[in-house]
Each structure stands twice: as C-alpha cells, then as structure tokens.
Image (tube, rainbow over all chains, first blue to last red):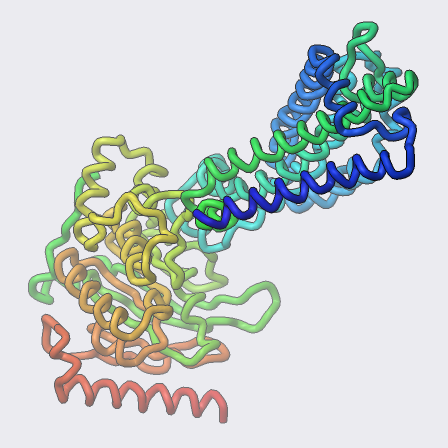
Amino acid sequence: MKRPLATLLSAALIFASLILIWTWIIRLFHIASFLLPSPVQVVQAAAARFSSLMTSLAITASAAAGGLIASICVGVLIALVFAQSPWLRRMLFPYTILLQTVPIVAIAPLILLWAGPGLFSVTLIAFIICLAPIIANTTQGLISVDRNLVDLFLMNNASRGQILLKLRLPHAMPALFTGIRISSGIAVIGAITGELFAGSTRVGVGGIGYSLQYANAQLETDYLFALVGAATLLGFVFFFVVMFLEWYFLHNWHESARAPAAD
Amino acid sequence: MTTRIQQPAKGSMTGELRVPAVMLEHVTKRYGDGPPIIEDLSFTVAPGEFVSVLGPSGCGKSTLLKLISGLSPITSGKLSVDGMTPVDARQTLSFIFQDPTLLPWRTVRANVALGLELEGVARERRNAKVDSLLSLVGLSHVSRLYPRQLSGGMKMRASIARALASSPRVLLLDEPFAALDEMTRDHMNEELLRLHHEQQWTVIFVTHSVAEAVFLSSRILVLAPHPGRLAQDIPISLSTPRTAETRASEDYDRAVSEISRVLRSVQARSLG
C-alpha cells in the first residue's frame, strides 16, 4: 500500500517543480506571453474558453475513437483472412507494411480531396494510421498457435470454423490487445493530423487539430498550450481505457495482463 | 453418448476372435523423399491391453502415435483401429500429449468440457459428464481455477480428464509424465492403472522410462532406430493389480533389468 502512495507523491512533486521552473524562466528572462505563456495564463485561457475546449476535445475524441474501433473491426477481419494461408500472407502482407510506411501527412490532403472535409475524413485518417498494428499483431497471434493444440482439436474432429473460433481467436487476444495499445496512442495523433488538413466543420469550432492551427494563427499561445494539454490528456485516457480493457479480459489467464494487478 | 465402461476380456477364447484394437501390418512412414522414419512395422494390440513403447531416440515412437491417431498418414502398409481407418476411428481414440496442452483462457472445467463442446453435446449432459470426470481424476475442488494456477501434476490430470471425456476405447499417451517429478510421476502411474482397471481402455503408452513401462504394461514393444522397427515384443507377467508395493518386489526388479538389458543391446547395435 505504501508504494503507490510514494509513486503518486513523487510524480506530484516533479509536476510541481516543473511548473515552478516554467514560471521562473518566464520571470527571469522576461519572455513575452505570446511566445511562452505562464501556467496561470494557460489555466485562465482554458477556463475562459472551457466550453469550446471541451467541444474540440469531444470532436477529436470521437474521430480518434471511431477510427480506432473501425480499425479493430476491419483489422481483425483482414487478419482472419491472412491466417487462412501462408500464400495469401506472402501476397498481401507487404501492403500492410506500405500502410505503415506511407506518411499520413502526405495522404491526408488526398483523402480530404476525395472524401471532403469534416469528421468522416478525419476518422478515416485515424482509421488508416491505426490499421497496420492491428493487422500485424492479430495475424501473428492467430498463426502462432501450438501445433499440439491444433492436433488436439483435429483429434476431436473440430471443423475449421471451430478451430478459428475456439482456438485461434482466443489465442490471438493478447496480441490483438498489444496492437490496440499501439494504435490507441496513434489514433489521437492521426485524428489531430487529419484535423490540421480537414479544417472545421463549423466556423470557430473544430477538433483540437483545427483549433491548434486557429490559435496559432491568432497568436493565442496560452490557448494553444491548453489545447496541447487537452490532447495529451486525451492520449492518456485512450491508453488507460485500453489498459483496463486488456486487464479486464485477460487477467484471469495471461501473464502480461496480470502484472499490474499482482504488484 | 453414454458412459462406455467396457467389460474386461473375460477368457481369452473370445479375445482371439475379437477385432484387434490396433493393428499394424508392414507399416512404413517417410516424409517426402527422406529416409523412412518407420519401416515395415507390424504388431497387434488386443482390446484392453496396456502396451508401452520403448526405444532410443530416433526410433519413431512419437511418429507411431501420430500414425495411429490419424494425425499423419502412413506411407505404405495397413493400419486399423477398431477395424476402421485411424481417421474414421477418431471417435474411439484419445491422445494425451507430453505437455498438458490446456487452453490457458479456459478454466479446468471448461478445458475438460472442450471435446464434448466440439462434438455438440448438450450443456446439461456435458456438465454431468464433466463433474464425474473431475471427481474421477480428483480435481473437483479446483474446477473453477485456470491452468496457470495448477501444479504440473494437476495440469496432467486435467489433460487426462479431457481425453477421457469422449469415452475413448483407445488411449494414446506420448510421454505424458516426463515433465513431472518422480514422486508425482509414480502416483500418476498408480492412478492411471486404477483408471485402466476400471475403464478397460486399450492403452498405447510411449515413454523413455523403463521402470514406468514395466510398472504399467502388460506388454512392452522395444523399437530400434534408423529406421524405426520392432526389435522385441516382451510380455510383462507381473501380478495384477499393481500397487506401490509392486515396485518393491523381486519380479519387478528382474523385469526392469531385463528390459534395460534389451534396450541397451538395441542401442549398442544401432550405434555399432
């Protein structure tokens, strides 16, 4: 019981000293607030425009979540196809690597051109950036089943579908969650990147990416900091939700998911 | 499916006429164009027999079980299980692997139920069957636990219970107790014999341990390696039922040293 408290305390201490150092630097070097606002100014800006900050957060969160969930659904389906034959994998796997290596900032304008600006395009961009880790990890999980276990199912006259549903899929769950954990972080980045190009759905209110650009253009550096803080927080929330789901589904049987509970 | 508890073969008169549980005639197995793993292997196992297979590594012991179970096709010869091809006989066969091969995401209970579930047995009947199997192998108290929470011996019991769920008539075991410590292993051997006595399956048991083979078997097949072939077919005439005391008897010691001698000469010939 002592250790989490100590961890929390030291984290708070480090946070407080960072805030102090930040404040002192501004005082010491007389930095203009449009270059580096003080922590108090950032909090004030966030409070003053709290409702539009929350709206931006909600828009970005929904695009990131939508993209992530869609990538899980589509990614698992593609992995199921890949798991069917080594021949298919050899043919198609290079394209998933392509998916990962193509710079998202380069194709984002194209997607906007084709799908038009708005939430749909942003979600699509988040989806594309999330897809590769899901496919790669789930495929690996589906095919790395112990040969003896497959034999066991064959001895019981199991059908291909039964082997997939009762053996390969559950066996792939830890790998799938590894993929989701990776994708949950980049989903937020993907959504914000998309918004940088997609602009706003309504004038004055857009996702975090749009608002970042807007605040930057208006030299509202304090609000820009508030937006960065909100985006970081969003990334954290995504990560912890996925961590919790992973623990919830796997802690009974899988080592990796047990670690936090055992400590 | 009803719980099939077969009657032991009473009187060898009828035993002679019955369909052999497992029959191999001039069986050869090779992978691709490689050298044969098993060559011209012939033997017959009568229903209810407990046969152990011993031999130096490379004699194709594990391959033999894969052939009998139909997991791997034979290259030439004839192989029948209960008068059927191995694949057709799967209903009557159960395989127990060297590792417990339990599904880590299922509880002990759900693991034991796996075969019945795949067969499509209704939940109620499945539950009743699983309950009786768990108490048979002494795991009722841990039925809700996951495999990682069990000891090695308990995992093996769960694996055995799962294999018995389909009421098999032929049981194939591939060094099932090799990973266990000696005490647990001896205990598991006694349990296995007790179950065999009750259920009267035909057992083919692959092992590295001469002591284990002698204790369990009514017959021991010694295979020679490169390619795998039958070197000796030795009946074990120790009195039954065999218990922990059997291991202290002179007959047992004599049988163990006899089999060890045969195994050594087979090994020497294969090296020389």
